[in-house]
Image 1 (cartoon, rainbow, N blue to C red):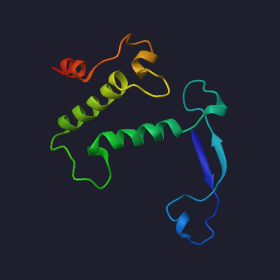
Image 2: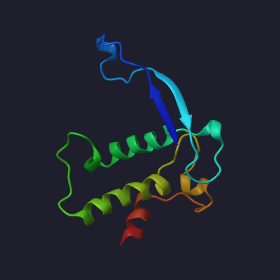
Image 3: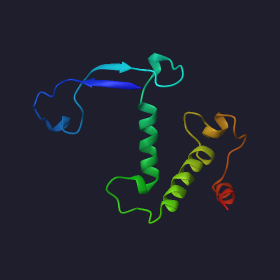
Image 4: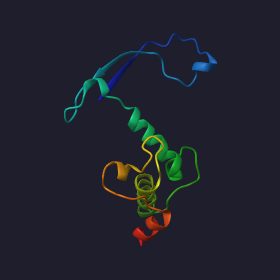
Amino acid sequence: MAIKQYGADSGQHHQERRYSAPEVTSIDRRVVAGRPEMDLISTSHVERLNGTTRDHVKRLARLTYAFSKKLEYFEAAVALHFAYYNLVRTHNMLKMTPAMYAGIEKDFWSVGDLVEATL
């Protein structure tokens, strides 16, 4: 867990700093579970995944009309996103899918393969 301490806001509200947090003065890192490398503890990966998920699952986007009438539909939409993200979508950095990188799958899935697996 990374706990950030922010400096006091000077009270000057410049337009370019309007939506950004004050300057980070210190970061306290604590182990919650496991044995992580303390220098590598960061929330950046989780925040990036949250942003990607919000962009791809419109039900999670802010200020939107997209919604699910039933919890079952919402859960299906989120599950479909993660299945596509992990099994179909080629990630630029990996040059393969995350499932292939983890050794779970040996081949790329097509969207057709994903649809077949859901039936």
